[in-house]
Length: 311
Image (cartoon, rainbow, N blue to C red; front, top):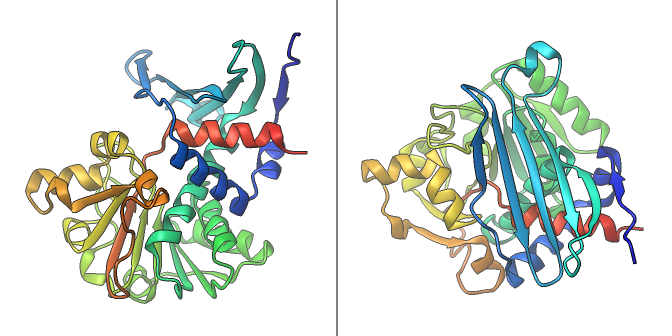
């Protein structure tokens, strides 16, 4: 029997991946585990890159194809383009092509919200978004979906107009959002600080963090990128999405490891260990926690499988 190849456009992917259900699906996927090779990086010249991100389990098989073309701004096209190919695990026949950008936005945000289940205080109700790019509103929506009691969402960005636009978009979705201008003051009051920036120097400082704060660091995905300083990392109980990814790519961990601000054993768990109950998340109300994600193809596979099962 031949499978009928189906294409899922961005709006269909977003509609199928409700955040609470997606977080549950990711938890099940992390608990079960999968084969996730280190992503393949192919340089296509001085600036262009092709990434291949495969993953497979006993029931699913897929690969995300990602291109990074910095010259795309001049073409009026986004720098990062992506498509996901889901294959039949038994026969290898292609089942579906999915918009890879929508898939990535959803699974990244859901993974942060899932981690916050274990790491943020149960009574956390004040979220600060640092950055107002395309991912930031999805992070707010995901945290809100898993934490409906969220009473304040503050949005800060280097460009105040972008912060205002993101806050307006979130208000239209029913979230209690407003743009803020004073990052330090907002960080000192926040219960959850979710960073989605392309910063190469720290934006949030450890001296600002009140006891009980949860840091959600999503933006940095290379050793040269930093969203928080060594003090923030040194004050935190640190969990990563995967050891293999974060300890190879996350500048927010590699820099303080190199400087001696933290040791390898300060990274206490990866997300799968929290989900399986093998490691503890937050251990006290006053503890500062930190979740560092760089993304894993396991999340793409779980999300893609959820899309094709949706009605």
